[in-house]
Length: 205
Ligand code: ZN
Image (tube, rainbow, N blue to C red; front, side, top):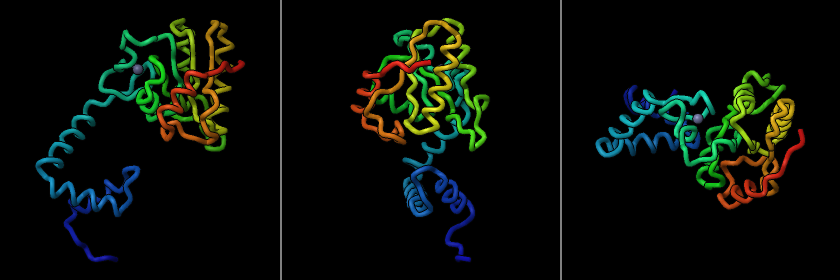
């Protein structure tokens, strides 16, 4: 075992930072050292911001978005077309689409994709909640902005079928060309995202 270099508090900070996506053990050490050097300017405010976010974070019971209010800022925004709902796998995809300002719409966050091999079925996602929103008659168009993976497409067709069964006359469309197969929305540039959203095309039920 390697000799201890720091006390347990700093060691723990490094270990936790190393679990943040994009940071490995090496970057975590650099980040920890930077925080320690900027104790007052950065470490203090960051620790306060973390505690604040930890205390106040909520999952929107309507759309599954992450926010500090429920219903979330997007669901309560009167300037958005609340009848146009973009269905995404993850909050990261929602943020990517918002960054691209693709459509002035509402969202529904599924929390993943159907994946029978991993034991993820419809009950593990927020699909029923989406169907409830459509059944309530508040939705006129659904855009299935799921990733172009096999699981994403399986999920899109499952949802399209469920919505077609409701017979509410809701338009269901998917992202157009431009989204690479297996591509994750978050990695696409804004122009590609916006183009894929503008050129969305209907999905048969
Ligand atoms: Zn919401």
